[in-house]
Amino acid sequence: MDTQGLGYVILPRLPFKDSRDETIYDHLFKRAEYRTDQDLELGQTIIKLVELAKRFNWSSDQIKYSLDRMVKQEYLKLDRLPQKRGFIVTVLNYEDYIQLGNYNKKKDLVQVSEERKEVDEKVKNVFELFENKVARTIGPIEAQRIGYMVEDYGEEKVMEAMKQAFRNKGNKVGLNYIEAVLSNPFTQKRKEKKQHDSSQNTKYGHGNGGHSQKTTGQVSPIFSGTGRLRRKG
Image 1: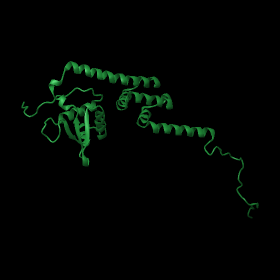
Image 2: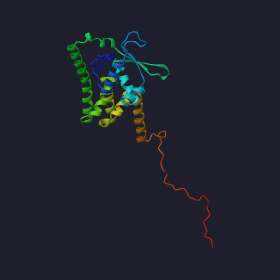
Image 3: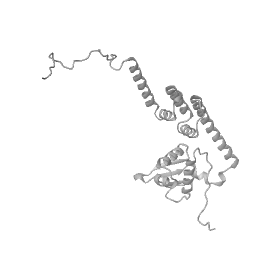
Image 4: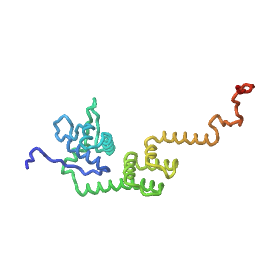
């Protein structure tokens, strides 16, 4: 087999929480510039969301969501190009990752194990809170969504949002409501207050300046005149 010009790539084993993120990261890592005398800097490549979506059979929104998540994890850096020409993606720490001498197997395994343990503990606390409130075991899709919440907002904010949601809605609350509280807690609080005030006004008859309308029990006459109807003939 002729391997001239193919080369090789050293891929780091990072603690990804989603297989889609890992697939996209590996693809970008392989495409990243590895030469120092090029227009792009070391570890950079240019992408278009539409092209990645077509390649992996995911939507552009899914691709962008994964990219944004990896930016938050400090795996990547994104710079938008003008005139909708795509993004320059920079693989952070690329120069260190491609140096084989930087890898210490024992150290890396321990570090990855500790990172995974820390993440699992944070998600575990949120899982337990949700399961205790709804009095059932959460399903795999719910677990994945909760994991994304913790990743995007942090354990403390997610748990606080859950507590607020359960206070407002009881144990019938769903993840959509919790996500709404997380994304805009102030708007959600105002909405809840408005609904509460409206309910109180309806209950105590305060809808029309404190005066509720009452029927008089009188029937309006059909004819306002005093004459009688006569039969013809």
